[in-house]
Length: 483
Image (cartoon, rainbow, N blue to C red; front, side):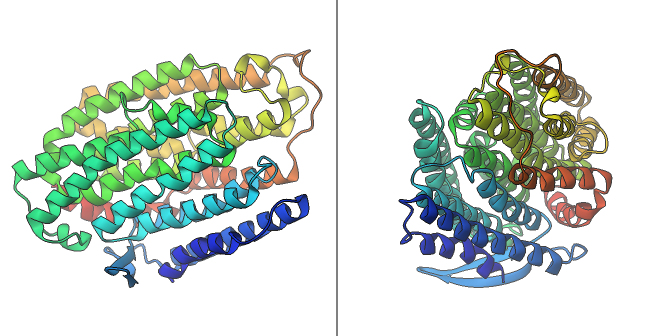
């Protein structure tokens, strides 16, 4: 069933290739086929989650899939099953969000979205390090074309090139590390690698190579330049996919590769990572306060939230690592919702991304203002939201190891409240701008996109135990290896 789940969006992309989209009616049929495939994929991901036993550690639903040069082992544990579920949930949401935003090459756009979904599912399911790297890099191809062809800015090609060059250049170091790991152990099977103890000196060299690649993908300062540009110039679906799932590849790479395979190096470089994460957190939060483009503002806020995730990952505590996984999942729901609100709802109506252009939207868009308020509160970590649970656990784990890193990391909560409240007040409060034309509130399609994200953010903030059992079982095995 896991292999079928991965193949469904990939086969759906092949089915879309011969279809025509040169008329509005044919384009509508292409969208319906693509949405149907994504909904089937989403249903299969939920079925896998229901079949998964959170109380049983180790990999489940294991399957050996034949490939051209051997077999690829697939499997899920408490770390990967929720990222698979997040990917399956966001794909139909992204397609529905961009239903009326893409006016040309509709068929290719939907093909690339389904390819991205299938490749992401493969990354989170493969248990072979080499195949993990191949899928990790393959995700970059549809993202590059999505930003470069359907981006909403004249600089979209430059942004696509930055995305491509930064991530590809960093991943070359990961390839070197994988080759070195294979030369040292003779295998790329993750299950076997998790049981092998490498020399600490070898671990430190391999760790640096993996760290460069994953720091770019996270991203951390100073290798974050590609993210704000890619987010600002990407189409709506591209921004939502980048924030919702692609940024989670680095978190998953740390959990799956660095912590269990290179534990001594992670302990050795832990203070350095925490320093870089704190600098990234403070810098990106201050940079967010200076943004006048609301898509760039949400993008910079993603950098600060992922910095908190990194702090939790390298806290060497069960509480911190569990919080990091939970916060990354929370960010995968809240950030796409914010991009939908500002980059979809507002931009579709007024065709401007300048924050100074807007004022007093509550008087004409009350439902939009309510949803925007809820997601803004979640973004700044208000209690009873998923972000609050994740940030609290991350910072608790960091404080147990380093009081200085924990206190400095906590400043991100204050700074995120500053830019979140400022953005909400600027867009929603006050009298309606005299230069703004009258518009309608959220449509049924827009509400259908936002409602699942809002409800899940609130539900899992109130009842986080729905996910915690599976996460804690997997984190226990990771932490045992690191210790």
